[in-house]
Image 1: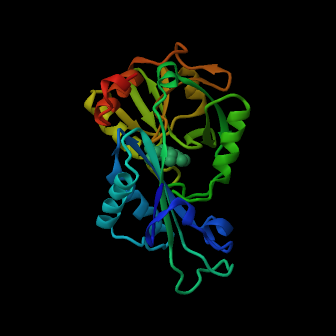
Image 2: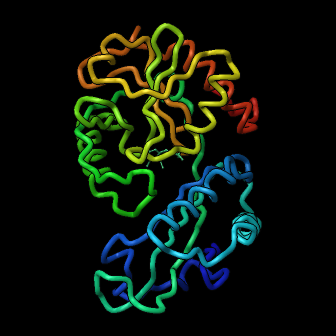
Length: 284
Ligand code: PMP
């Protein structure tokens, strides 16, 4: 398998970093996870734009222009003959240099991207998943897709140990987002989610959900809801490039709505499948 790097394409076994690498020592970098359906990128523009925004926010120069990035990412799929459902993980760090908190002079950014198979699993999309709640203990710049994921990792592990799919994070009882997803509440046909402030990641799927919800004729309100609101909710769902639009049927010990995926979520899932050009044979 081929990897895309800042030095062009290399074989998977050929990529090595010095142990003094700033991604490893400081989490000094940013990343993207991009979904591929049947060999085609979904929301590629949104992901590339966000990569450049994240990199700029922490003052890393992306080693390729946006145009080059699109070309190289396409080439990554052709070189690996990707024709199935997959994802690309792309990571960009400040580079390799003797350890020092301050940016080293003349350091070269390290970039790599690789493809991983990711077959679509419809069972949880059909039946929904359970979640837990956790305090959001992250920093104030969660809109940057940074490699510093320890709070997210700890929250997801807590969920995993409790047999749940995701941890829903809250600041002062207001739901921000999931450990690796955005979170939405449906009440009386209105969809609510935390506004796209610096406290959440501006999800690429979230951006599409705003558009799809509006197209379907449901009001979309970007306002934070509270943990107490969940008990009164009709529906709840989360989104991400890998989880898509995932119904949530339980939060801690609370059943959401009827305990089954609701009609608004289901309509959004159908709209998503159309938008992502998912073939009928693979649909929910
Ligand atoms: N929030 C967080 C914290 C995430 O890690 C992710 C997944 N990358 C998302 C939201 C969803 O983002 P996207 O829709 O771009 O995958």
